[in-house]
Image (cartoon, rainbow, N blue to C red; front, side):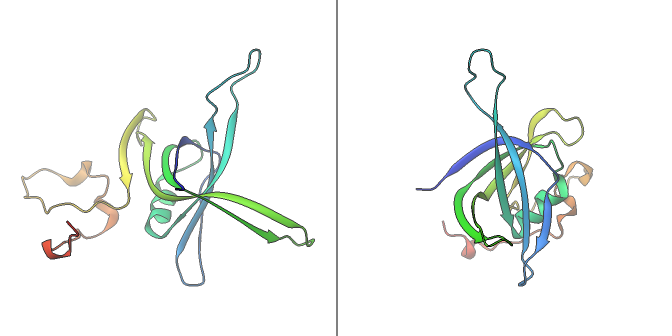
Length: 152
């Protein structure tokens, strides 16, 4: 089983690119504090590269900046390539399956407010309230799901 759960802060702004097949690919790194501190030393951190694809990549790029706190669920993928000097370079990335924002977008407090992947919800009756508080209001049209399409 290859499953990773991380909570950390972005070390730089996300970098969004598109593949040849027009798939969004977001890359960045997060700093994850180490649990143990040796006597006389400061708490260390591990800097972990993360990669997200498609809608997750675009959402993360839109709402995250350097310093944003995020919870990641994903899997480790290793690889290698030859650099311009012909030297083999080994890579280790966490591919994002799910994530949650851990910062309140207005105040920077540590509260969970948003999650991914994109929410699928029952159509709601209009009660006259404004959608100004809806964090997903600008993601486009609501998704209608027929009961026959659900796997359960």
